[in-house]
Image (cartoon, rainbow, N blue to C red; front, side, top):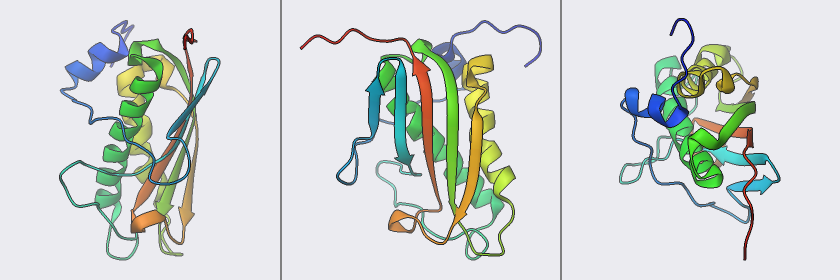
Length: 164
C-alpha cells in the first residue's frame, strides 16, 4: 500500500476478503487473553481451523517453509479473532507492541524469518502503521500437540469500562 491509508482495521480485513474464525478458548489452565487497563496480552495461538484436522509437524523435517507460512497465517487469524473479542473491535486496537513466533523446528532449520514474516506482513496489512511491532522468532524442539507454530501477541487497546 502506498501513501496514506486511513481505512480502519475492520475495513482493511474486509477489503482483504478475510473472515476471522471464532475466538478460541484456552486448551489448558490459563486464559487466552488477559486485559489489564489498555494492554491485551494474548497467549500462544496455534494454527487451529474448526472442522479441520490440526496441522502438525516440525519445520526442517516433514514440513518446509511454505507449510510453515500457511500455519503462521492461520495462527495469525486466530490471534486476530481473540484480539477482536478482547478489544470489542479491531478498530479499538491502538498499537501492536510485541509478537512472538515459536516454531517447532529441527536444530538445522534456519528459515525462521520468512516464516515469521508471514504474520508480521498480515498484521501490517490489517492495521497499517498501528500494526508495526517488535518481534521474536524462536525455534523450539517441540510445541504442544506437535503444532508447527504458536504465536503470542501484546497490544495496546482502548481501555474499556468494566461493569459487573
